[in-house]
Figure 1: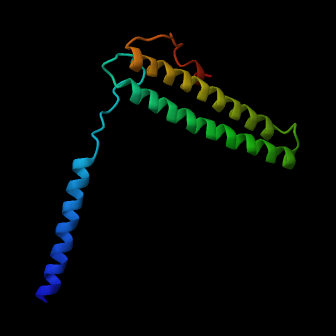
Figure 2 (figure 1 turned 90 degrees about the vertical axis):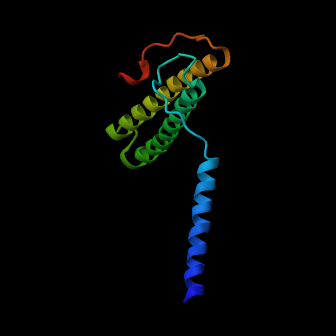
Figure 3 (figure 1 turned 45 degrees about the vertical axis):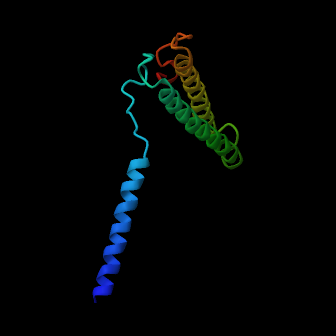
Length: 128
């Protein structure tokens, strides 16, 4: 019975050691306080990365909807309201992705130079 008990204790200690080692190697993540801030003291590359990730997700949605449009055209005809609505939503996602890419590039520019090169309109893509 002692051998079995010490075997479980050994596994527990190994697990604890792995957890502490992983925690020590983990990169600390500073939360982004204001995504719209161009203050160089903010992590502008993290902000740019966040905008780029959102843009990629919107591009994927736009592409998926474009495929849906083709299916809807075959099922309901090209003049269907479903086709029209899916096309409009796909276009909206694509335009929103472009806007997010512009924002990402503006924040990356601040990270590279410390200065904002572009003046962006206030969330023009998303207020439709």
